[in-house]
Amino acid sequence: MRYAIEELHFSVNNIVIFAWSIGGYAACWAAVHYQDIRGLILDAVFDDVLPLAQQQMPSFASKFVEKIIRYYLDLNNIQLLKLYNGPFYLIRRTYDEIMNFIPGKLETNRANEILFFILPYRYPFIYNNDEIFTLLKQYISAKKIQKKTLFDKYCSDIEDLQKQIDQYRLENPIGSYPCKFGENFSFDQRQRFAIYFVNQYLIDFDSQHCTSLPQDYFCLPNRCNVHNVSTGLFPYLENVSYREYNYAKDHYTPWHSSSLAENRFEKICREDPFGLILQTSWRIIRTYPDGFRQDSSNHNAVYAWNYGIQMAALNFQNEDDIMPLSYGKFLDNGGCGYILKPNYLINAYKTRYSPLDSQLNLDFPQVLTLTIISAQFLSRSNSTIFDIPDPYVLVSIHGLPCDHQTRKTKVIQNNGLDPIWNEKISFRIKYPKMALVYFSVYDYDAFTSDDKLAHFCLPLTMMQTGYRHIHLRTKNNDSTHSTIFVHVDIENDDENIFSTRL
Image 1 (cartoon, rainbow, N blue to C red):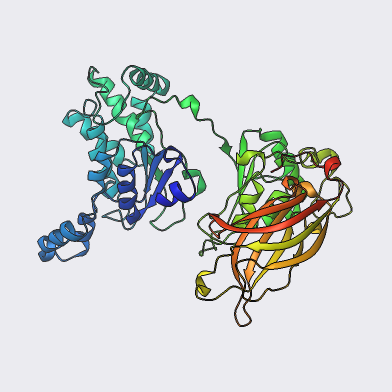
Image 2: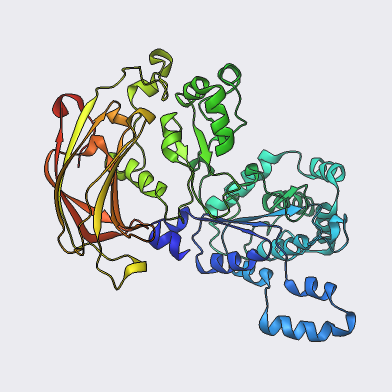
């Protein structure tokens, strides 16, 4: 949470905490201490670690196990959830070999115990007698067909139930629990809501404990039972499977989005690149790193942007060379996170744009000439903290494949304070509106790989001509006192560049 707030600059009310298995305790603890989070998702989470531990140990050690657990490992999620007043939901894995005390018996799943405690705690006037509590247990333990029958019997008019919740919320905003919802309800009304609330807090997933969770299960917890917030304030896109262009144009709308793992994305780029580009001109496509990246490394987001992908998800915790490109890409337009595509991408159907066709002339080519004059106050790398840097500057262009180029200066020995190069480098860039200019300062090492000291990346369309100081950043994008002093010249600059400038 501290990393998300302080380093990634997320607002607390824009954070959703997801936890799986034993991680549920840490997530519940964080939710208690950050009550304003957007929501909490608990996947395959137990109610209390004690029953699970006692099941695995000999019966004669039961008292000893209880003392050890309560003293050293008291992971009691129910007690924490009682202190959390925000929205959450449980993902219950129906074939969970760990959370089900008896394999295949859904009624023995430990997630049930969370609902048995939390629902009556939050809504004491709904679950106020043994008959309704028996109905609650019956519904939670029922198999799919029985569950549907019960739901159809008690919740045939969902809209009416939701209207009653909305009306209560308007008149009595729920700031904390327990709440008085249902105080004057009849027995029949309480039965209806006893079933309805279960569906607000529980989602079943037919899988075992360690099966990967499909992306469809990652959604915001329902806020209708918590705060006085209109659900109309939360517009969303409906995620659908990616299909070829002819199918998509007949069956999908602009609010249908699709998510592609990087391997699938690359396969589509090989087999039907133009169909993908056309779809990005009227609906949102998202890419994300494949699951095999267990080191949290990133795929090259530039490759996705070249095909018009609007959302290239990245592992922000990684300090690789891809993250600076992402920060640089979205510096434009005030850093608000939204930038307009070039016209040849927006109107790809007319322009027949292809990132791999270097013969197309859809932009105004420009020549970027940089004179790398000097640097100031270069910091030492963590691995050479007692050594004076031997710096050199590497400048690379990232955009369409035809524009990818790299130049570097000579090495200055033993001078991190004010090294001077006075070297001129030039780049001819065919698609300047897609180009990123990436400055990196390295510490040369003759025996091991060179250490990156600092960097800065920005769109070519934001560069101004003349003498400029490039303010460098660290690997995690923090600002530094280090700068590069350069002279910038861009041919045909005033005529061809229309974007916001620094």
